[in-house]
View (spheres, rainbow, N blue to C red):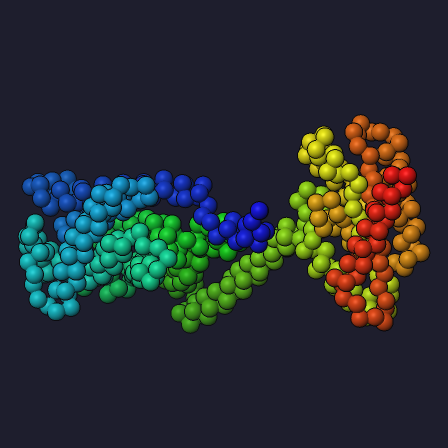
Length: 461
């Protein structure tokens, strides 16, 4: 038994886009490599005497423990990928736990003012006012990252929700620190000139956050960004725009103030206006896009894949509406029910491909000989139905035209190895009646079977 169409639709829209995940994996590997190079270089700069002289100015703003945590995060993320062995997953958790201990100790020192000694365990950092201590923001970020990596593979549970919340937390911290750098808000990225989130640390944080979100996209809440559904495609389209827009607008306003083009009140007013306009346009574009995708989806769900005419669902949906309209306007509505003669024989003797062509030919015949306003549908394997806003006399004329067209096709041959033949039943609605659409169709179906039975008796004679 085949899976219902709505189940197939649900699965196809929620499952991940494997091609996208493969591309993301390649980018993630590059990000981990860049972070590892930065952290390893600075780690060695702290431990190898004389190496620091060869490094760019400001390298020591990334403390040795910060570099250690970055390396631990890289290792844990690399080992938490899918298709890893059990011991690799356990090693990933161990690295994450060590990361939590190192970052958590710095966080503890900032909150309580007590010294744990872990900051200067590897290097003294005597020139700093807080020797060896990473900034409060960096410590919080790395603590959240480490906790999320301990349970990185959690999925579909309360724990998965917690991990997603932790991931959202360090992503938010990254954006706050980035905003601090962009707009000169020093307290957002450090406590002093020696204890701050350095540019190289921020770059590493951005890359690790990207990789961590990509990992969670395979399991948790962030999977919406890598799915194949309508929502996922829209989310991917607007994500980068949504992240960058506020920064670009505020930076633009700050620049106009800096060069003297506008005063602060005017710059703020224009930023607010432009933000509203851009968001309004974005909402409108998204709405149009959603409507387009919804229309395509509706057409797919209401259309028979083989013939291109309506399927059973589309027939019932539009039929109910047509019956209501006919009663409202006091006009006639007729349902014709067609059953193909000999389709099983064609399938058995000539193959299902030929049988499918037989079905398509009948669908084309019906579509060509009814008006565009009439409803043509395939309601079963060898059954078609037509809804026409015509009375019985007009319907008989249309049927005569169809039988004549079928006879013309059969007599011409046209390379076909079968004859187009069908039985048909007709039922017209009573404009003052209360008969349901299903009952109207059932009457047409019954009339079709009577004709089919009469054909069999006639053939036997």
